[in-house]
Image (cartoon, rainbow, N blue to C red; front, side, top):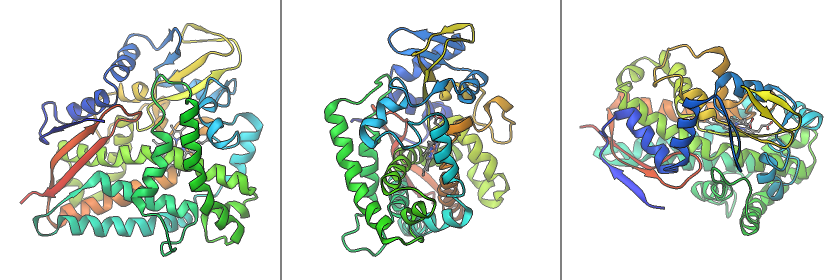
Length: 400
Ligand code: HEM
């Protein structure tokens, strides 16, 4: 993986950096997806599937049970060989609904606080220590640690457990599974499946221990109370690591950079009332989960294009929501696109409360530091050849 280092003030500012992140992730696929979306709301791409780019049509597909996530041409093809068939993001219909129903109430505000707070405290301390006395801090690394700390709670590993893997290693383990996926590659190769399974096995060990110790104060213990079997608990925790690691480590540094580039930090640091709008608008503008997959199980029409059973449907969240305009917190989002960055319908992001808690905790710490003494971005690098566009590094330093 190579990087692209540049001074903070890139031509094009906020939008310019976001473009660089996209072309860095994939120099052809992202511009092509955006370009096709501008041309037509639905287009059949021979050998790849049917690309759907308009928010209301994306939502229609998500709300229509005849489009499945479990088929071999949807997410099932990617994840079932690695984590088995029952991990939400590869399930469909009544079975999926039943498992979602059992998980209702999993992320209560209290539960979320218990998962995020310890890692959040470490994040805050590391940020403050890094910026102390004119120092600098590599922010992407800090967010990885935050995410790794959350993973350790999901695995049910106490912070003081002997031999506990450090937070960054837990993050690396999580991304060793998801980083195998690429746009335009519908399934993993046999060696990739073996690699991903080995990582899942490492994650499974502590989950099984915590589940067996039957302690409802741990996350696997709570899954047991909710009636999940041990294997289901392992599957669910794996699904959370798969779905919730890279999205977050993509988003938080991008939001920090957009607030800096857009000159919004002084206002937000002084008055936090605009923060929820800024976070929401950032999610719209970056679409950290850029594409959703489905398989058509029935014949039909979508935006004038004939759909056949077995068609692979590529839902371009990134175009559907990003095409609504530039980053502008406070501008209302049309109903069809509202929260589409977290999906819609039966598979709507179950981890949203946890994601929001992690985002808010990181942003609160950043703004507190800014209010104490403004920081700025000293340098940044963009990751290349990745599924989800993200900064490889973002170095923050005191402005004076
Ligand atoms: C900014 C962060 C996040 C974004 C943008 C995001 C986005 C999404 C989207 C768009 C979906 C729907 C996918 C589809 O319908 O095909 C989804 C599903 C899901 N998300 Fe998130 N997510 C985020 C963070 C998280 C976190 C932190 C977790 C867990 C801890 C998580 C766990 C899940 C799971 C398990 C599903 C599958 C739900 C199901 O199929 O029933 N996500 N997410």
